[in-house]
Each structure stands twice: as structure tokens, then as C-alpha cells.
Amino acid sequence: MPHPIDSVVNTSKTSRRNLIAGATGLLALAGLGACASDKSVQATPVNHVAVPKTPDDVLKALAEGNQRYVAGNVQHPNQDSHRRDEQAEHQTPFALIHGCVDSRVAPEMLFDQGIGDLFVTRTAGAVLDDTLVGSMEFAVSAPYSVPLLVVLGHTACGAVTGTLKAMEANPEDPALPGEMDDFAEQIAPVARSQEVSGTGSAAVSEVVKANALAVAKQLVERSEIIRKAVQEQRTRVVPAVYDLETGEVSWLQS
Image 1 (cartoon, one colour):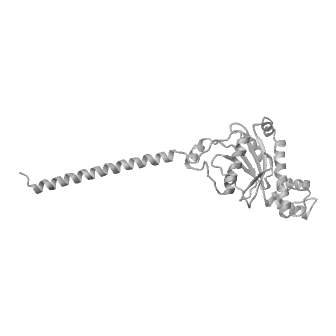
Image 2: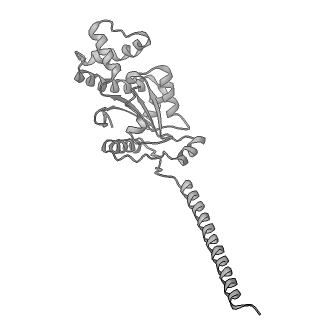
Image 3: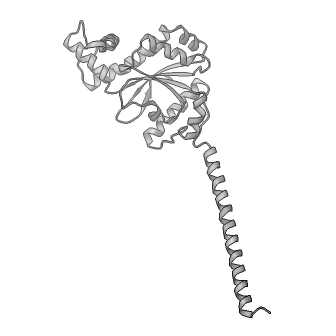
């Protein structure tokens, strides 16, 4: 006959084994739950937004993004790993931003957009050349057919300032070193049309604005593909100016 103490010890051991087994089961279930939770988080897009389809919708999306940027309330949409993976197979940009090479003018940041949202082209002073126009024609053609092209100048533009200084030194034949002379040749006629004098901030701002308007007009005149898209109202070309100090984009046409 078992001793009473042995019965108590055996019962205690059995209870302890049951307790350990139960705890282990709970931990396993918790682990499975955590894995499922992690997978669900990874599979769920963060801050993904619908693609605007019309020129008006795109302009509204960019304007609202810039307002968030100015206010310091950026959402960083379409910037997670899910979006990166999704766009690796096929991009879905809804606008092309053509701006200056200036390091302070980053379109995805100042319009608060993400991966695959924007085509971006850049030259000093946002001037045009054949390859650049071809890139823009690519953007407005199938399969992308972006509804909006933005020509984005910016305050205190170095290319404009350099051109005005060259004009001040030699009004008849302003020149900059090397291939930089190419953008000076395009900006100088715009500056002359505004009859600006000097190289102060007011003069630079005036030419920046006039240059954005001129480049937008030149683009439509220069490209039959873009002109047709504009005439069919599939695409709009809008000039704008970005203020380096405030972060605000001023739309010159809407």
C-alpha cells in the first residue's frame, strides 16, 4: 500500500507537469498569434492612396501634398516595403515633375508623394533639350499616360542668377563656361523679355517665374505628342514656382 506522503509527492509532480504543459501550450499559441499578427502587418499596405486619374485630380493631390509639407504634417504615402515590392513589377506614376537640379528641390518630398507616384526630370534652370522632351513624351504615352506635367522653377535659382550675371558682364553675348552655356542661351532671352536689370533677388524671382511659363509653352510647341495629349485634354502642362524658404509651391496656371 502506497505511503500517504508518496501519494502527495506523486500528485504534486503530476500537477507540476500539467502546469508546465499548459504553460508551454499557451506560449506556443501566443507565438503562433504573434507570427500571424506579424504577417498581417506586413501584408497590409501602410498609407497607400488611390491613383488620381484626371488633370484636376492630380493637381489637387499635388497641391494637398504640398500643403501638408508646408504645415509639417507629411503622411509619407506609398513609401513602405509593400509599395516597393508592388511597384517593382510595374510603376503607376500619375504626374511628371520637371524641375531644376537644385538639391533643395526634391519633388517627392515637397509634394509628399511616394514610390512610383512621380516621374521626375531635372536640368539646371529647368530648361529643355531633345532627350528631356523625349522623356516627357514617354511619360504621356501609353501605358503611363500621365495626366499632368509640372514645370517647376524655384526661388534663388543658381542657373538664373548665373545667367543674369553673365548678361550684366556682356549684355550682347552672355556666356558661361563649358556646357553650362546651353542653359544660359535659353534663359537669357526670357530675361530680356522681362527687361530685368541687376542680379538681385527680385530680378531672379521675376525671371524664374517667366522662365517656368516659357518652358511650359515651349514644351507644348516643341512636342507634337505632348501637344496632341493637351489638345485631347488627356494631359495638362502647368508651370509653378517653389519657394525655398516657405516650402510652398505657387501654381502659375491651374
